[in-house]
Length: 159
Image (cartoon, rainbow, N blue to C red; front, side):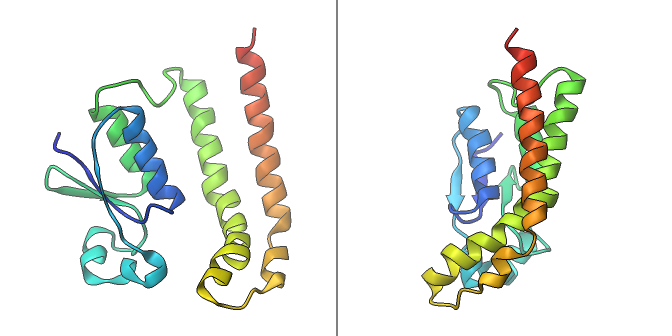
């Protein structure tokens, strides 16, 4: 496999996930910054890599893929090194469940707080506290669900 090129900003949680997968495999990669806060994700060059203008996209062996789950599974399946997923089907299902909870419920409800409290001040934009309050129940439920699952996994592995 040729050295992958990750297209996305270093500050992105999802870009960082792909970088961590490659780091765990001790695989070299190149990071090509695509600053979504400056609108670079909506430029034609990036839209050709990711039709939704999100990050990251990864180019490897003249092929481009997007969506973190697809990318990290590809890395795990094609790059030598330690396996990134549990071999046991139930443990792997729990892993996917936790990732799904974070992606579907946790991240969307938490990113609004990050934007209002961190990004907007950096950009000189107004902070809208009302946006921080919305989705509070979703944030709590996500943390509780992931926390309970982690507790069960840790407890069952401590025998």
